[in-house]
Figure 1 (cartoon, rainbow, N blue to C red):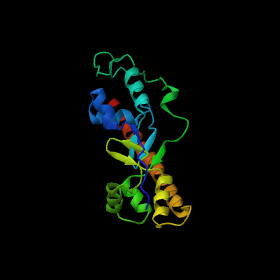
Figure 2 (figure 1 turned 30 degrees about the vertical axis):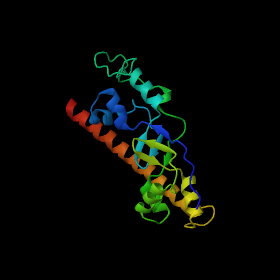
Figure 3 (figure 1 turned 90 degrees about the vertical axis):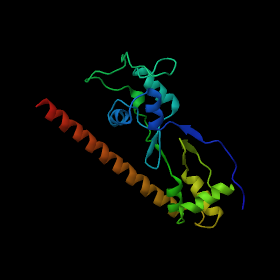
Figure 4 (figure 1 turned 90 degrees about the horizontal axis):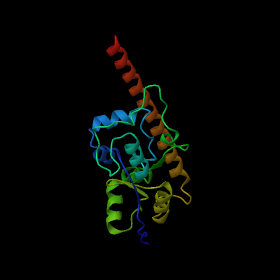
Length: 196
């Protein structure tokens, strides 16, 4: 078997990185991320969203959550939007976030156990991570197919694996949309009951 080359994966910020840098609580960040005034994620690894560090820092600076030196700034919220104001165009990228699989999803796609993928990675023969959020590694579908073909676990081309991956991504997209809709409805209901 051939060993995989060791390319450095691209690092993205997770929600925990952003709220740690901004010095805000987790639930505060989750409330911001659920609304329209947080940039949409650039990638997903499994269900974990990831933002490019440059976009995350730009958002934190423009909203006044950090100062020009990258330190949390609590006094001046000059970037806080008005209720009737629309978010800037760069908050919503034109393309849908790219999706990457976790080690567990990779094993499920290849019909093997997760521990086998971990052992292969430890020996230097496993899949090569394309992106990283914290300690969570994300694998592209091309890398998963390459690994399956290399070990003879799947047929050439990996059409079946790619079809299952497309189904998983579609399911994730629909469930994410449902959860956002439910959160929005709950927020509006809470706002209406507080106003009454």
